[in-house]
Each structure stands twice: as C-alpha cells, then as structure tokens.
Image 1 (spheres, rainbow, N blue to C red):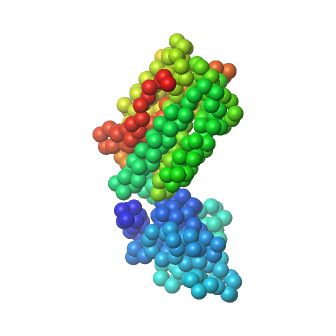
Image 2: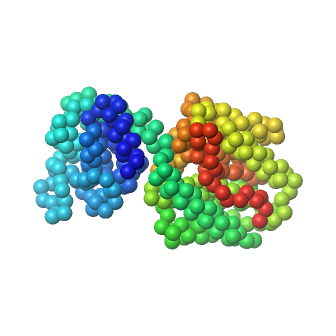
Amino acid sequence: MLKLKRLLSEVESKQLDAVAVFSPSNVLYLTSSDAPSAVLVFRSGEVISLAPRLEYLRALEEVSVGEVYTFSRVGELSEYEKAIPGDVYEAIAAVVRERGARRVGVAGASLETRQKLAEKLGVELTDFSKELQRLRRVKDEEELKVMRNAVALAEEAMRLAIDSLERGVTELEVLARVLSFLARRGSGLPFTPIIAFGDHSAHPHAKPQGRALREGDLVKIDLGARVDGYCSDITRTLVFGKPSPKQERLLRAVRRAQEAAIEAVRSGAPAKDVYGKAYSALKEEGLSAYFNHGLGHGVGVDIHEPPALNAESEEFLLAGDVVTIEPGVYLAGYGGVRIEDMVLVLEDGHECLTHFAKDPVI
C-alpha cells in the first residue's frame, strides 16, 4: 500500500515511534474502512485498528491492513472478538506501552481527545495532522486509479440524468433515477445530487423539489459518486429547449471563466490566483457580483478537502492534488449556471479528469 509507505516515511522523518490517527475520513484513508475509532501506525510498519464492539465485525471485514481489535469494559465477549480492556484511550495506551513507544504523534483528534490520550499515555504528544493532511492531498497512482473510476461513474450518472429530462418531469423524479442508478452500480453518495430547474437553479445548493421542467428552463445538475471510499464531483448546466440570448451569455461567460482558471492550474500556483482568473473573466462580462462562492476545493475520501480555491486562500497547489474548478453565476428569480470539472495538478500543468461534454442545449 503506497500511502502507508508514504506515511511511514513521514513518521521516520519526524522521529516518532508511533502515530495515533482519528476521524472517520482519516481512518478510512488508511484502512479502507471508517468502522474503527482509531488507528495506530508504528514506525516498525505494524498497524493496529481499534473498533468499538458494535463496529468490530464490519471492521474485520473491511480493514485492508494490519490487525483489528475491539475495546470493552464488559467481561463477557464472543468467540470472534479480540478485545483490549477499557475505553479507546486505555486501549491505545496499552498497545503503545506494550511496544515501548515513547514519541507518539496524533492526527485528526479533537482537543478533548488529545487531552484524554495524553493523560492515559503520560507522554507529550506531537501534532501530526498537517503531515497527514498533506499525504491525503497528494494522490498516488493507486488512489488516482480509483478516482478515475469514480469520475467515470459520475459521468454515467450525469448522462442518465440528462437523458431523463423531458417536459413535465420533476426535479425529484430525476433525482430518484440518479439515486437508483448509483445504488445499482454499488456507489456510495458523497452528497445528495443537486437537480434544479428554472429559477430554482439560482440556489447554488438547491435541494430537489417537485418543480416540473418547462421549455426554456435552465437545468443545473451537480452530482458525484463514491468508489472504494473516494469521491467524484461534477456539474453541468444546460437549457431545455432553445436558449435565450441571456442564457447563452451566462453559459458562455461561465465556461470561459472555467477555462481561464483551469489553464492556471499547476504545481506551486497560489490557490487564490487560480480563483482570480475565474473572477477576472466574469468581471469582464459584468457578472462577478453574481459569483458568490469559492472556485473549488480538493477531493479525496472527503468530498470537500484542502486546498480551498477562493479569494482568501493562503494555500498553494501541490502536484497530486485533485481539485474541482466550478465557477458559477446566480441571478435571483432567473436562474444560475455552474460548470464543474475535476482537475489533477501536475508539476508542469494539469490533467482534466472529467471528460463529459459541455453542450449547453438539450
């Protein structure tokens, strides 16, 4: 597992004996399961996951690396449970002491969790959160293969959604077809898809309702898939019927803004500068006041991860980042246009992972 090797390299460079990793997405990243409450990674390469009893069987089935234990203060256990007495903090302390680890890092823990763990261990903890966050940002080839599959599945769902558009169909009916398709394909849901018709599309995060599709409506579809724990996220905006001059202007402006931003994506680029390319393109069209959100975000095991691409970001793009580029303009009482693609950051440029057509007319 490439990401475990990368993690161990960071553990060694920080001269740590072990790292205790918390939070469902961090645990999922390391073990392929969010069932454990915590994961211990030792400098030796040993990995131990600790799951509560009600999640232990699922953890046994899903965890892809190392050993799995449960923790419990209950004396009576079933024959398949390997248990460590106590709560999760006492279990971590027991495992760490047994292996003689003194320098322990911690990632993804709340302040309360850190305090309780430090109390049980009796040692000073080293914050490892930034190191793990950076590891999660920089996708390796194994991760990228899975993410390409997630993008491809989202594109299939997008095609189905567009093919479902007909006069009188409701947003909720299209949503139901998309959800059914993704379920049949074994996909998890990174978020509830956005299906918005007409003036409802002016809501950036519109919740599908019973609104029926009419001739001339703007149609905004934002959806994603989750494959082997990794997410995808794409958006298309179309016109049902012949677009008006105003709709054509909005669609053209947003597409140009996206193209300008994507062109600026490369390793080392300031995230706020990439945002600035889209903003400037919309400002030239007199539409920047209607661009009311950030340009994009990182994607991985979480649908929203660093880096944030917005006007206030202090982050720089890293080779291996997968980010969304999704400029939008939203006119209250009229409608909104957003186009979103997933882009892989390269040392000398970028690769667009999304290939779905941007034809604005149905």
